[in-house]
View (cartoon, rainbow, N blue to C red):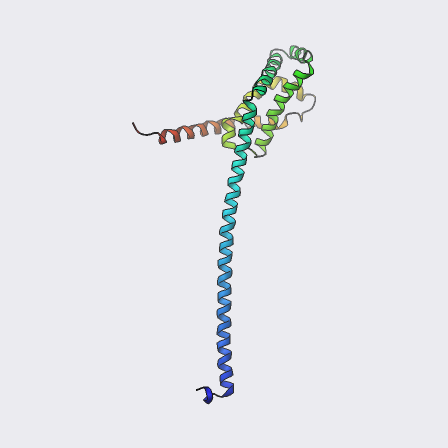
Amino acid sequence: MLGFLGLAGVADIATVVLASATLLLVAAAVWAGVTAKRSVRIAAEGINAQIGEQRLIERRRRVYDHLGTYYSRSFVEMSADASQVFKAFATDMSAGESHWDGLSRHKRARVQLVLNFYEQVATEYNAGFLDRELSNRTLAYVALEMWDRAEPFIGWVRRQNQQYFEEWAELYKHKAEILDASEASTQRQADAAGSAAPAG
C-alpha cells in the first residue's frame, strides 16, 4: 500500500506521525505539570491551614498554662504577700519603702515572682504567643488590674531601671483596646450561648 509513495513519502509520513506524537507528549507533560502545580498548591494550603490551627492551639495552651499558675495555691499565697507590699506603697511611698526593707529575702523573692509572672504574660501577649481573644478575657485583663494595684511599687522599682517590667508597661498602654476587646468577646460568647439555648 505504501509502495506507491516511495521512500521519501513514507519518511515524510513517519516524520509527521512522530511530530504529532511529540506534540501530544508535550501537551500531556504540560497538563501533568499544571495538575501537579494545582495539587501542590492545594496541599500547601492544607498544610498552612493545619499549621495555623496548631499555632492557635499552642497559643491557647499557653494561656491555660498561665491560668494554671495564676490559680495555683502557691501563686495565690505569693499574691497575698505582694498585695500587702502594693497597699503599703499605695498608702505612702516612704511607708512602702520601710515595709519593703522589713521583708525577709524570702518574702521579697515571692513578690518579685508575682511581678515576673505578669511581665512574662505581658511579654508573650505583646509578642503574639498568646491567643488574644482568650487572653483579653482572662490573663491580659488580670494583668491590667494588677498593674493598677501595683503601679506605685512598680514605679519605685522602675526608678532604678526603666527596663524593669517594660513589657507589662507596654501592655498597659493598650488598656482601653484590651478592655474593649474583652467586652466584645464576652458579648459574642453570651450571644452564641443565647442562640444555642433551646426555645422554651
